Each structure stands twice: as structure tokens, then as C-alpha cells.
Length: 113
Length: 111
Image (tube, rainbow over all chains, first blue to last red; front, side):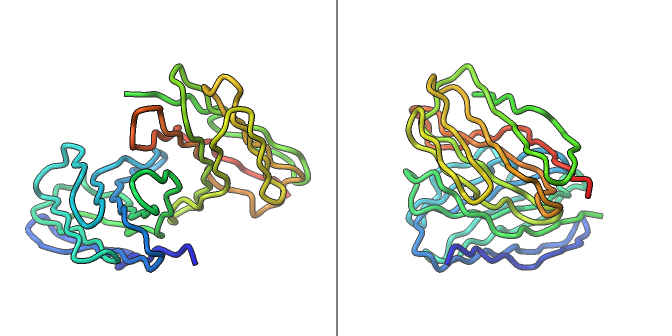
């Protein structure tokens, strides 16, 4: 089973809203990632969690707040977003940070109005 | 940061034709991955390569890790309509724990 699930599939939020994106995997992977993908562009790394600890933050604005409650779950809390934050948000996981085979979820299509 | 040059940017082919795309860099890579992404979905891992010169197949797909470790190739034989999508190469540069992605090749298959 190489499945990573993400909810919701689509999300529309206003600039004053607070929402959360959720990601789950049951492959026993200990590294989890958040990526942002704009149309016709490759995924851009936002955050990396390794063994439930944040190990990389690619200078992401504080209006994006990641959380890893346990080894299977990864959340991305959103607050006071801007319209330019509209994108496909992808979660991925790998066995650990030394394994480069990353398995992606289907993504959450976020629209900020 | 490291840059991957992926080509072609897009291609239109007739169903049944073979397809080739590649990624090149000025940096040395330890790992090459090839992903396919359908519209509105996440990338799906197709093939992973770990050794220079390695040639790996997955059904009609064949990928190679270039002998110089600075490039990789993906071939699709006898294309079918469901091959349509964007193909991304991704690589791990020596000394880095992160993946660098190419800009993608958009494949269109004409039935």
C-alpha cells in the first residue's frame, strides 16, 4: 500500500478564515512533506518533518503553520492567507529523510478569495 | 540552488508512437526519480534510479541513470491515450536531502 490521503480535496476560504489541511499515511513512513504547486509548475517544498519533528522550513510565511501530531498524520494550518496562496497543496511521505522515493497524496486544491 | 533542465517542455504524439524525454543538470545526482501527474492529482512515482548507468523498466516505461550522473532519460513505448499527463523528473544532489524537480514535460497523445 503506497497511499497517502489528503482532505479536503477542494477548499475555498476567505482571507480572514482559519482552516486546516490534513494528510495521512499508514506505510510506516517517518518523513513527511508539504509542497505547494502552482499551475504548470513543479512542486515546491515547504516543510519537512522527520520522526515527527520539523526539520526543514523553506522560509514559508507564518500564515502557514505545520503540525505533525503523530507519525501517520500531518496537518497544515492556514490563517490570513492571500489570494496568491491559491494553489494545489501536496503532502508526501518517504521511509525516512534518507529515502528519496517520495509518495504523494492527491492534493488539496486551495482557492483564497 | 541546483537546476534541472527537462526537455521537451511539451510534445504531441500519435497513439502507438514511442516517446523520449530527458533531464540534464550541471550537478551530480545520486538519485533520479520519474513521476507522472494527471490534472488535479498528485504526482505518481513511476521509476526510481540509484546507480550510474542503471536501466530500469516499469511496463512500457524505461528510464536510465546517465553514466555521467548528470542526466536521466525516460522512454515510453507504444503510447496510449492514458499516457497523457505531465512527467516530472526529480533528482537528489549529492550532499542534499531534498529533491530537485524538473519543470515537467506535458505529453499529449492523439488517438
